[in-house]
Amino acid sequence: MRHKRAIPNRGFRVADQIQRDLSELIRELKDPRIGMATISGIEVTPDYAHAKVFFTVLIGDPQATEEALNEAAGFLRNGLFKRLQIHTVPTLHFHFDRTTERASEMSALIARANATRAADDDLTND
Image (cartoon, rainbow, N blue to C red; front, top):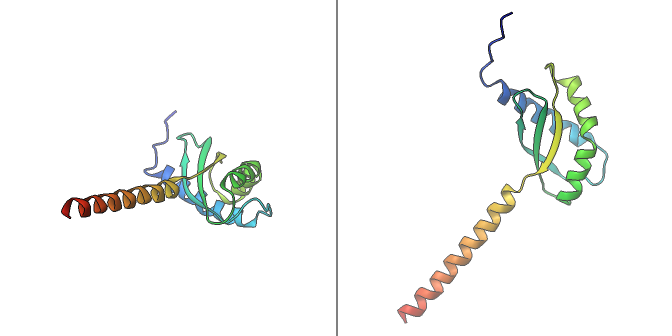
């Protein structure tokens, strides 16, 4: 029996489609704990058994949103079954994406360091 050749970038295309479909499905959820959540990225395992779904929250509590999304994961996966044309729809695992949070913390640290350096320069130039 011959094995099917891997389709180039299929994992990326599947992840991209899951991201689009999940964004729509999440908007339909009625759970008040889910604030304004945005799917920021998806990592799918090579066998498509699991998907890490990274999200950010504009309004709402990230921890409560993560809890609510993980509780709704089965419902959301069922919704994906109906939309996706793939044999295996992955089990969803939601994780809060701290990238923007870390970026703003780093920006604040850089701004503080620059302000301190400027103040030190003023003192040495006097």
